[in-house]
Length: 377
Image 1 (cartoon, rainbow, N blue to C red):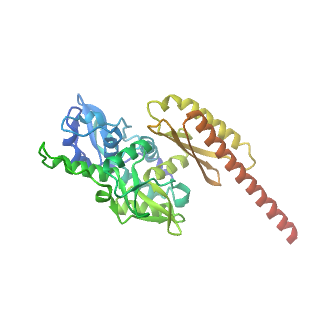
Image 2: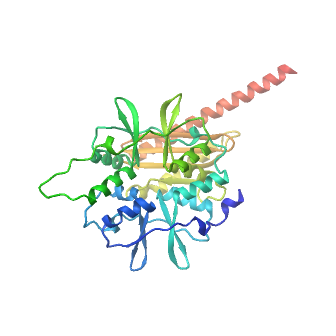
Image 3: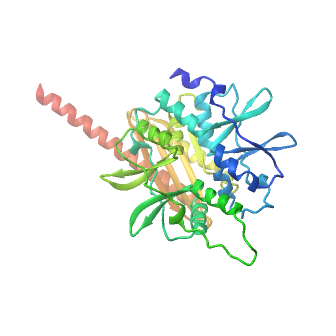
């Protein structure tokens, strides 16, 4: 829709607080919870934003001496020239909870993910998709009796923002960055004598119970509506009542970005860190070669490709690859291994084989339809 290419309106901008880069993080925790993100400045200029994701990702122990600059994310800045489509792409690429908005030569506020989600819903940009087309798998779980520090370590090592909470083998809740940050904020305000040691938090005590779920055959619009109305960032996806994955705001943004006709780069790569960013060119080359091979199939062509990489502390790699095919939907593949090159090769070949198999199925269907038509004659 044309309106998706119009500029982000100032009505999308909401207020937030601003902090100098030397300010202690503890001063901003309550405001991060209130606004979703705060803006950090240095010498009066924009330095970055801090949200609960960036606080936990850094893995730094929070104290009154922790400068907020240590937790700041370098993110794109939106302005009156940024289209709604481009803003969605920048949310996807940055993974931030909010992006700053620049107007009249200064940052005037932030645009939240929730606001962008409402825009996607109102524009019906994902109406043709079902939840199973965009969900992520698998769902990483942790026992409800585990400590919060253990949960934080699992999130950092797996580079994820939420965990399923299991008790007696059953799904009991969801633990997100926000729950951990709320717990840290509460503890930072509680008095504690040096001679006392506070009991470490337990996952089951702070996780959100009453997990919201959605069936895999429901529409993507239904998933977005549930997220907006419930003010949540994910839904557990079920098949016949059994959890099979999770759908997140990031999954929704990725699908919009992949389907946009004006996205500058049809090969979208996310999750790169300081080490893996050196391989961006090699990864792009491999994915372009994959697209070229697929495009040689009869009646199959690639619209766009989304690739995500997670590097675990044990120096192994987890990769997810999605290919959007013209008129034939989305094909997903995943792979994990200890070598970046070998894991990349594996996921590319898995994807190629999956699409080749789909091509053969489509071809057989066409032959059967032709035969049926001849029989009718």
